[in-house]
Amino acid sequence: MLKSLERKKGRRENNMFLAEGARLIEEALNFGWEPAILVCAPDALNRPYTADLIARAETAGAKLLMVHERLLGQIARKDNPQTLLAGFRPRSRHLSDIPKADTQKGTLLALYQVRDPGNLGTILRTSDFAGVNGVIMIGDCCDPYSFEAVRASMGSLFAMPFYAAMEDDFLSWKTETGLPMIAASMNGTCPHHEADYGEASLIIMGNEQSGLPDHFENACDVLSRIPMREGADSLNLATATALMIYAAWGSRGYAQ
Image (cartoon, one colour):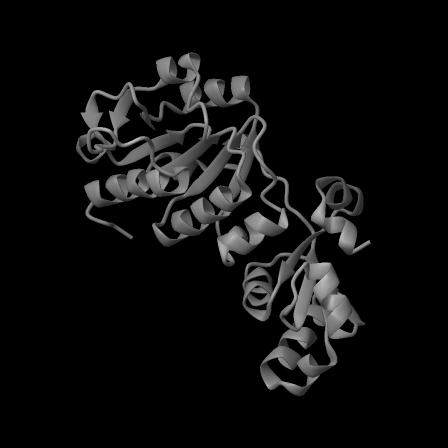
């Protein structure tokens, strides 16, 4: 069952995803995520820090399963796994769950059909670091609960609120909130760091291969462009997103 969690179908059927390592598990518990199972190697009980973490998880309702390190490696798909692995219950959040205050001050980030889980995890990590209010995943995005996304987030998956939305619902919500929407686009007319992000803004980033479709760009209030040297091909999505959200944060004096 635990090995099946490496596939989206297995995560859906068991209503569970995996987080590896004491640091990620501690982050999840600190932010109130529900642990279903805690898998550990015998050595974990001999270390005060991990022993305390195991006790916290059990108090929160986790079932403890002790296995040989070889089996732990098979579950984690690693030759040298960490001594703790936990299965957590996923959370389902939608546009209606976004606090009103988050639409009135600061930055919200929207991602259109992001397909690379490493990019998604890195974006969640950067958004957490830069004080983004939340991340909206539009349409057929990759699964934030995949091994790759959870690892790349370095624990920010548990700290950063993220929401799922269908395309039409998102565009209607954007109109209702009145948030100015700013995209990074090859059709942009101003440098990304000179765009007017205001007190509150919605940054939208497109798919790794094809960017944003025309009807999404038409719905934007500002199309900005990240400057690049002549002849350069493209910029990694996670890196481009970091530049955009830091430009927005910097325009407000990096206010906390």
